[in-house]
Length: 187
Image 1 (tube, one colour):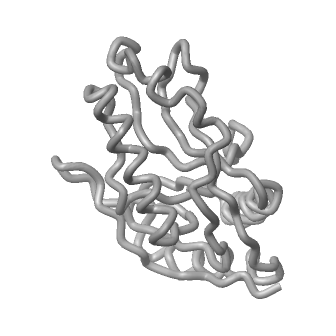
Image 2 (cartoon, one colour):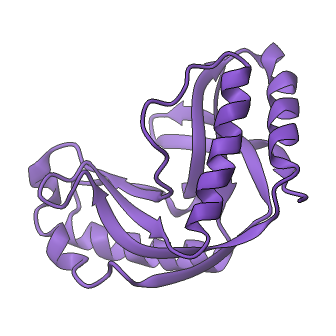
Image 3 (cartoon, rainbow, N blue to C red):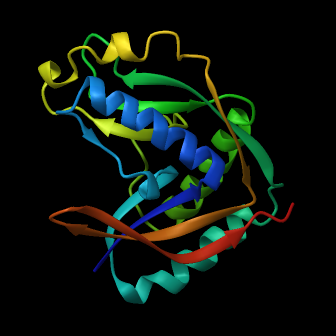
């Protein structure tokens, strides 16, 4: 079984900007589990464990779904928390310009995987880049002050010209992601 998700990769300049933001946030809230900058991505769909024999069919279905869509620029903008800053569980960087295109792309990916028999996603897609996960509310004490005024900060743009199917290997030191297929948007 291969732990699998479908995502868009980050450009180096945006990744570097978010890495600096993570470092600043980690100084304010060291108990939050912060993402490694190399692992940052925009997840369109997490599938979990799938059989290796099912990968070719998955790649084909997603390639067919995203092929007619045009590439687009996506602005990485702002810092927020799910569900909110009073009870943060996930700290994220958001999306500005291109957000609607990302939602359309996620819908195409969702339709493709549901057609293959995967359970539909229960929650609506909210494009974001997970920066950190909060285990206990007290772990994030002081974090909202550290990110005050960053809700509109622009970290740059990424060119979403493909989706990538990643393998996720869970290790004691954290997850390691490896691309298995890059499927272009050709519309």
